[in-house]
Image (tube, rainbow, N blue to C red; front, side, top):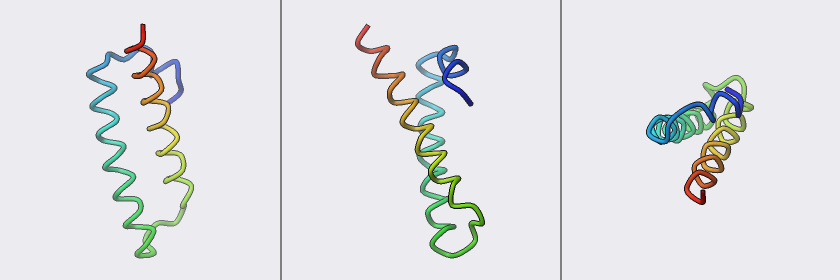
Length: 63
Protein backbone atom coordinates (compact mmCIF):
# COMPACT_ATOMS: atom_id res chain seq x y z
CA UNK A 1 0.00 0.00 0.00
CA UNK A 2 1.60 3.24 -1.07
CA UNK A 3 1.15 6.78 0.19
CA UNK A 4 -1.35 7.75 -2.51
CA UNK A 5 -3.69 4.96 -1.50
CA UNK A 6 -3.47 6.04 2.11
CA UNK A 7 -4.27 9.67 1.27
CA UNK A 8 -7.59 8.63 -0.23
CA UNK A 9 -8.76 6.96 2.97
CA UNK A 10 -10.70 8.72 5.71
CA UNK A 11 -9.32 9.32 9.19
CA UNK A 12 -11.49 6.56 10.63
CA UNK A 13 -10.21 4.07 8.06
CA UNK A 14 -6.63 5.08 8.79
CA UNK A 15 -7.14 4.64 12.53
CA UNK A 16 -8.60 1.17 11.95
CA UNK A 17 -5.72 0.20 9.66
CA UNK A 18 -3.24 1.54 12.22
CA UNK A 19 -4.74 -0.62 14.96
CA UNK A 20 -4.65 -3.69 12.70
CA UNK A 21 -1.02 -3.14 11.76
CA UNK A 22 0.05 -2.65 15.38
CA UNK A 23 -1.49 -6.01 16.23
CA UNK A 24 0.19 -7.51 13.17
CA UNK A 25 3.62 -6.29 14.31
CA UNK A 26 3.09 -7.87 17.70
CA UNK A 27 2.12 -11.18 16.10
CA UNK A 28 5.09 -11.04 13.73
CA UNK A 29 7.46 -10.46 16.64
CA UNK A 30 6.14 -13.54 18.43
CA UNK A 31 6.49 -15.60 15.26
CA UNK A 32 10.05 -14.37 14.75
CA UNK A 33 10.98 -15.20 18.33
CA UNK A 34 9.59 -18.72 18.01
CA UNK A 35 11.25 -19.31 14.64
CA UNK A 36 8.04 -19.57 12.64
CA UNK A 37 8.59 -16.41 10.59
CA UNK A 38 10.56 -17.00 7.41
CA UNK A 39 11.00 -13.38 6.34
CA UNK A 40 11.91 -10.93 9.09
CA UNK A 41 11.52 -8.10 6.57
CA UNK A 42 7.77 -8.29 7.09
CA UNK A 43 8.25 -6.71 10.51
CA UNK A 44 10.19 -3.84 8.99
CA UNK A 45 7.66 -3.28 6.21
CA UNK A 46 4.78 -3.24 8.69
CA UNK A 47 6.58 -0.80 10.96
CA UNK A 48 7.24 1.49 8.00
CA UNK A 49 3.55 1.39 7.09
CA UNK A 50 2.67 2.33 10.67
CA UNK A 51 5.04 5.30 10.42
CA UNK A 52 3.40 6.39 7.16
CA UNK A 53 -0.04 6.17 8.76
CA UNK A 54 1.02 8.19 11.79
CA UNK A 55 2.66 10.82 9.61
CA UNK A 56 -0.43 11.18 7.46
CA UNK A 57 -2.74 11.42 10.48
CA UNK A 58 -0.52 14.02 12.16
CA UNK A 59 -0.35 16.12 8.99
CA UNK A 60 -4.13 16.05 8.70
CA UNK A 61 -4.55 17.18 12.31
CA UNK A 62 -2.24 20.14 11.79
CA UNK A 63 -4.27 21.43 8.83
